Image 1 (cartoon, rainbow, N blue to C red):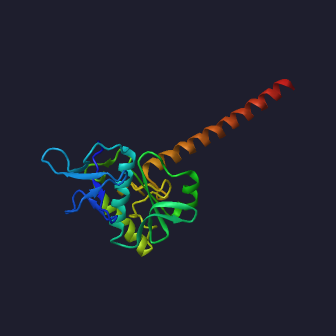
Image 2 (cartoon, helix red, strand yellow):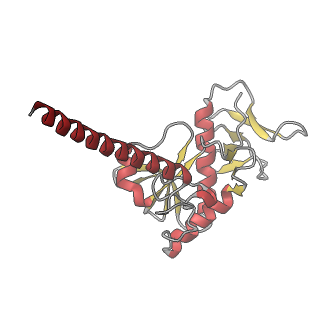
Image 3 (cartoon, rainbow, N blue to C red):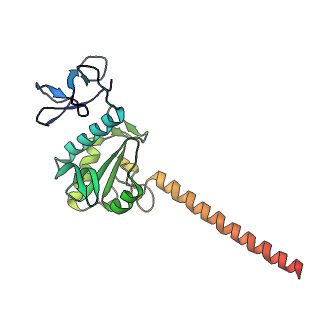
Length: 220
């Protein structure tokens, strides 16, 4: 059974396992009854009162989406699953920004291109995320979301400490803009690789021209 850390009440209110709640809570995915498990050994979680059939992917995506929304909502207007142009944002912030939660499937190329300057990607498939404590290289998810939302509200998203890579748009903490052009190390490596390939192609073209000139001289 999936170890859910989030559940909902009949009125749709959302509760995390750390919240105090005396209500009967239900599964976010299948609507089955949930029971809080708060033992001393296993991490606190909700489990189905009867065996559930919920997918882990949905659990992780739903949990992180609601957690990010809950934090963002303390800074500005945050909404879940709302339209931004022709796209649906996992979390829409201030009606202009799309926060996307990635567990396995990244945003489409079209979504990346169309929303790029207003897109923030929380890529939880990145091994630098510590799931149990919600941290990226030691930096708590809550701190990162608060920092992102504050920069958006203040109009300072171009600042060096806005923790979102300017190229891949992923949240990478202090590593987000540590390289020239305000990009992360992964994107910098990718750009270096592309530049190296370009240099190799140009060098090959020069070598081909030399070979053609020599061949022409021999023929003459």
